[in-house]
Structures are given as C-alpha cells and as structure tokens.
Image (cartoon, rainbow, N blue to C red):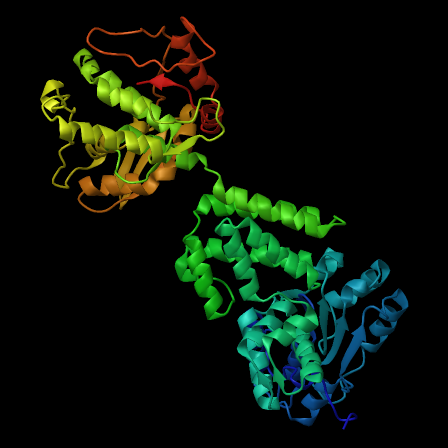
Length: 628
C-alpha cells in the first residue's frame, strides 16, 4: 500500500488548463496563443511557491506536443501527455537550475538543441529555479534563447525574478502567477475531502487555506498531515493545535475587547495565547489583518469582511459600528509600529501588551474632528441643558454661564436665589484632575431646591420679576426653486452653508466659483490659500448636497487649486484690552485664585492662546485667528 500511495499534492496536480485554479489570466492567455498559433520561443513563469508554475509548464508542454497539436483542449490520458506529466518524455527536458547552473551545463544544452524531437512537434526545455544560473551561464544562453531552432521552446520558472538578467527577461513572455485566494483553496480542499471520503469541516478548510498563504501545494500537504494525525474527521481545533494557527473567532474577540476599551479582558486574552504556546508575532499580524477587515467593512460595507466565515463577518460588521474611520486608521498605524518592534524584541509578550494598551488609548482619546464638531455645534445652537444625569465638562459649564451672564441685563442680578444655589454645588476645583462633573448629586439638588422654593412662593420667584431676554432669531436663507446656475448658485449655497455652519465662513469665503456643467460643480482656491481646501474637503459631501438643493439637477462637487483664483484678503485680529463692563451688560470674570487685580481680565485670553489643543489645531490646519 505504501508503494502506491501518492500525497495529495501529486495526486491532485492539475492535468489540463481547466484544472488550474486561481490563475485565469495566465490560462486564458496561453489558450488564446495556442488557438491563434502565436506561440513564443520562451516563456517565464514567476510566482510564490505552490502557485502552479511547474504544473502550468507541463500543461503547456502537453498542449504543444499533444497528438494533432498544438491544441489547448488535449486528452490528458494520451500516452504522450502522460509521459510529459510524469516527467519521462524525451522531448520535454526538465532541468533543475539549482544543480545545473554552470556555464558547462548551458554549453551542453546548446549542443542538444540541434536535435529534432523524437515524437512530438517541439523539443521543450523546462528550467526550474532559473534564477540560480550563474551570470556566465545566462550569457552563454542569450544567443540560443533569442534565435532558437524552430522546433525548440524554452520554459523558465522562478520565485525570484529580480535575480535574472534583464537581457534574459526581455527575450521571454513573462507570466506572474498570483497567490491563490483563500476561498478557492478552501473549496478545493473540501472537494478533495469529499473524493477521499474525509469529514473536513468548513472552518477547518478555511484555517488550512489561510495558513497556506496562497499556496495550493502547501495546503494539500497540510491536509495530508492532518489526515495522518486525525484520521477521517478533521475539525478546526485540530488545525489550530497542530500548526499553531489562530482562529478567526479568537482574533475577532480580541479585536472586540480593544474596541470596547476592556483593558483587563484584552490583557488576559493575550496572556492566555502566550501560555498556550501560540506564536505571538503571528497572532499580532492576524490582529492587524482583522482591523484591516473592520476598516474595509467601515468604508465599503458591500466589500464584506475578507475571506472569513459568515459568523466572523457578522462580528466584523458589528465592530465597524464601534469606531470611526480616522480612529481605526490611527489604531492600525500604532499596531504596525508595534509589529515592527516585535520582530527584533526578545520579550515579544511585553511589546504585545504595550501595543494593546496603546490601541485602547487610541480608541478612547478625542481627535481634532471631535473638537471641531463640538465647537461647531456649540456655535450654531442654543440648546437648554437637558434633564437627567448628563455629563458635561467644567469648560462647558463656564461657557454656558458666561453666555447667560453676558446676555442678561443688569436687573437680572436680583435673581440671587439661583446664583446662591448653583454656587453651592460642589464643582471640582480649578486644579482638580477630574475635568468632568455629573449634573447630579449636589448640583442637581441645588436645582431641585430652587424648584421647591419657586413652588412654595410663586409670587416671589415669578419670572415676571426678571426682565425676559428675547432670543435673537436668524432668518433662514430663502431657498430657490432649484433653478440657479453658475456663480449665483454658488453664492446661494455658500450663504446657506454659512447660516448652518458659521465656522465654515472663512473657508467658504476663500473659495471662488470656477465652472458648472456636465453634472460637475467646480470651486477653487488660490495656491496661496491651498490649506483651506484640505479643511473644506472634510465636509465635501455636505457642501455637495447643499449645492444640489439649489441646482436644477444634482451635481458632483470638485474642489481644485487654480492660479486663476485670486487670494482673499483676510484681516488679522489685533489684541485688544478687554473692557471690564459695558453699559447695561455684565461681563463675566473667571476667578483664578493665584491671580489678582488686572491680571484677572487678561488671564483667560492668555490661557486661550497657550491652550495645547488650540495650538495643535492652528498648526494642523495652518490657520490664523482672523475676522472676515
């Protein structure tokens, strides 16, 4: 039995063009060349191991020397084709480039090319690992390769084409064989298992296919090894235990812990993998691949989550909703940096744990987009504080207080009861590490006390005793009937955008109308103000929708840099001494315990200029404090 046994890699080797999997671009070209009788004198097959270079070379030799050939649709059971497939044909000489790499071997080859084929139409020389030939051997082959006898064809195969002389490559038709997709390998393994009477689970087939890294021969060899270990039934756990692979579910679980900011669970998971003897470098690479799938799912849900089982794809889809695109890009960058350090580190577990903690921090920390969105929302809305237990920052509380104090008339200072209750709330001090407070506890009790007082003495706490402050309403920009075009369309859309997002005014004012036609609406910036384009392009979709609302038909927005656009003159704000009060208006003063006297008025301004977040925003957007 052992004498006749064949490993799967040989038993299921492709015999015809139809059997070659995952290399359709190569197969189609070769079939057309044979059908149209456009056969070159030399072919070069390039690709990773196990992708079918030797098999494709033998199939091409069969097609050229088959009875009645050349023919792309030959009979693989013909005696001549069987001899070629087994490597016994006198007309197809297979040469190992690693052991026959000297100039003397090439000279012997040059002498034999003069002999006519014995049974087929061509005498075919197949040189495997041709990059192993010496420079002298390549040079000795040049003339014969360029002008061989009509009955001679050369086929070369290599995994390292960069080591072949360019003069050799230029005389060949080059075909790059790609890594075979994971799903194709998994389906072929399931087919082999069915033919062999094996019970191979789909998850196990996908694990083998992933571990083979695109090589069909490697996958078949791994399946052979699993049959010897497990017998007729193979599960995913068997694949993971024998080859040390990581399951897609385990990687997805670790990714979910990071996105949910669960430090403890994530570190316990890493410790468990390390204790089980898993390759941490491979585990980390799989984790990066998982977040790559999450990123693809985030930006293009139709593309799916990669070559993973259906249940893992659902987990990837769920995790894509937990993080925005900018954060996941930063997360992948951090993991890639850690992966580079792990390759040379003695203690890989330590770097793995540090990388996980950094990843969780990257998910948690705010970014500039969050700050811009928060500032924009604060500038465009005057919402009342909602009821319930709401989390607000100290800065937001101070901002609301300042706005109300500035808008209220002097007579409003008679409302002493509200001020006393609010000041009684236990807010964190200025130097406290806790920068956020809940509107619960003592602060919420203060508001409840105020409501109780108003209910007990309604005439004393009646709103009529306090002059009402009428809110200033901004009349919305009237919309057109959707028939504007050209500069008028841009002016109308720009006015509407500034009304909705006042912080865009500087960017929009610097933009000028360029052209409108064929469904495209083009605006531009001068080269001197090109940095505005980067800021405005973040909201390109919103601007495009606003322009389409005024246009006769939807348009596609294009933002470009044009020398024809004149730069807009922007006026810088000069530093002014703040006035302590204005007639009829109370100017709020934020008290700093360490300051006194006139320094109280200038401290907030200096703090604003020196704020790290403001500095970072100005540096990132190349911006200045200006007024239009």
